[in-house]
Length: 154
Image (cartoon, rainbow, N blue to C red):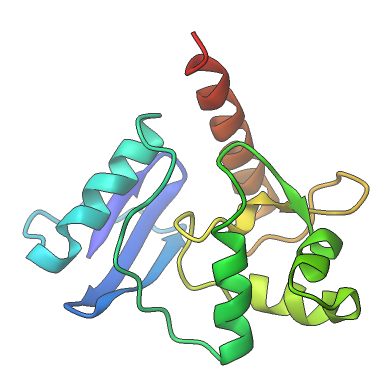
């Protein structure tokens, strides 16, 4: 199933067990019109996120990954909307600052674009670092969350 977003087309996959994959594509594919019930909430929440109306996803997730990857993805979900964290900080939160490369690798294999917020991970010096969707998309997402957070204060 496909959803048009401000950053390209999102391909959303899953079943009754949960959402297994959300990928951003460069191809322009029209938004799917017949959406299965088990994907309907994902479409709605992604639209709400991009419209600045949602800060926290509440979807049933079912990503495929190793135990370590699942642990990293769970930790990514603890980074608040509008905030960032470095790979080193995340490694420390997971209990092993020497695992920074493994954490970065797991971050890069995140199958749930935007929903598991790997875009909130930056370099220790505050710089943007690699992002599977491209650094321009990462910057857009960080700006979107920053601007949405500021707007919500008033």
